[in-house]
Length: 159
Image 1 (cartoon, rainbow, N blue to C red):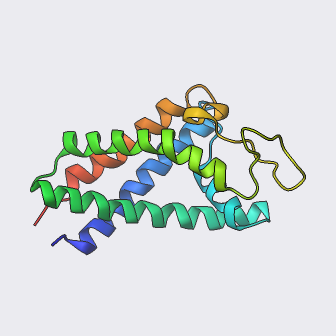
Image 2: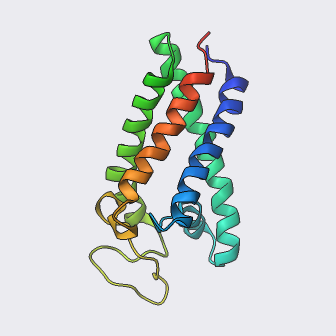
């Protein structure tokens, strides 16, 4: 049994940290990726509405993954910064290698890596490791996920 509300609370804050790292990296020109924008444009046509919808989806996914981490911490009967950071590294690597390919394949407004842009598919596909969004994108994405996991590992305690 996990501490459901603790996992959601710490997950909300951890998602805030992950978002801060990614947004700061984007603002500093280290990456062009905006996960809320990519998620939002999957469901909203209007670009300004997409960032709002995508931000909400991003927070919901962050809380969902906090529950997954809590289950893993519970199963392992321990938590901690190193364990959380390790889980975050695996999570980030999976997002880069599998998630970005998956998003590129199902996104209704994103060009595919096999076909160029069309009037309705104007977003650039992420490419392998999301490198189309900048050379530093894989490093920044891994760092953000490691921070997310380390934060959860530090604050969440299994029952």
